[in-house]
Image 1 (tube, rainbow over the protein chains, first blue to last red):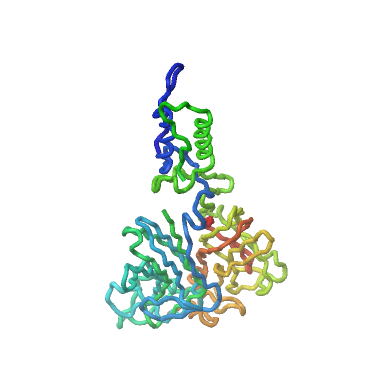
Image 2: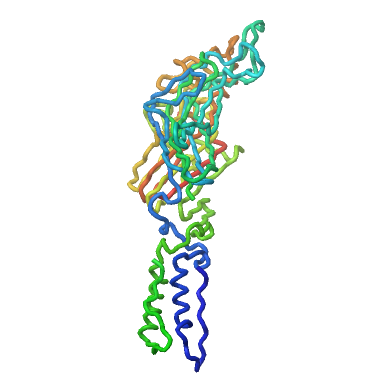
Length: 232
Length: 250
């Protein structure tokens, strides 16, 4: 509301009703829409926020045990040690709202049988030595749910360089590198929603993994997902 | 609810003190204590209207309206290293069952939660455990955890953070009861052989980066977090370290 003004009365003036009523009427009209013209900077404290999670909200998944999930799938599979690694969201973001996602865990005793390339093409050199994780967002705009990858993060099974390969005639592979097990993984990403508020529903975020050669086995033990919704 | 004027002045009607005072009293009451959420304009207030936080440079902690943010980032120079040793465990330095937790410096913020909160701790650090010279050599795994001590002085090891810092040895097997840094059932593959890695490669392969993100739902109170290690090597250290604690008030 605007700053409320009063009329200046001087000795001998006869006040009229409009002059007397004006400041009260101004306040009555304008106090329904108080804005920062009427407030001082930094006046909003935590206790002014409406209830729990007014500014941000967290959604998590945790597996904290010591069992592990093994995969030799060359397509992404949701990690499932004692239940799927999924953080359930189920909210409709506002326009320009930010979702921050972090994930971490540890790979246990992996079995990298093949860490080198045995064939061309060149573009695939080194791939058997890789395994990768993906954070997959499932959302719904009405109708069937859809998915979008929030990012992929790759690691190596061994200390070997990723650019070596052996062709059929190249002979015996040398220096395969040392395999790496019990290695932590950790990554994070952000996503901004640019659509119309309330149209899309974020359903869940899944932590997935894959290998690049089915002869290798990746094992994942403890893992977690933390998603932070920054409301505005 | 917006202000409501109790009395309306009319031309030709004598002005009374009660009417004038009544309007002023209602206005005073409204301004002082009756402005409610519904009176505020939607989508008008900005971050400049929110209470400014307090920065404490001594502990690098920023406390603001919706939470707390604190942490550090150290480089990998030798002067940044944080050492640990199994020597404090006397004659049981590599014992798998004797747990003595050493706190890693600069990873132990004291968080005072003014109300219930969600807490995220993000840690990343490079760990190295040099080869034992007096104690037996053996890829010893030094357990690494994030812990916190709550208002009741009870230590909680966070199982969502367990990790291992391995001794940089050149061997062909791993002691019983220890994690094998190379996986498998105990033997590392063909060290120095035709297809295997060289010894130096093996030693370097057990120098690990340990990183994790941990989440806690905590009630209001005082908490001391720390990254701890149960050392099984005579000399180990964490060099480059990133530690961040974030508090989100509910």
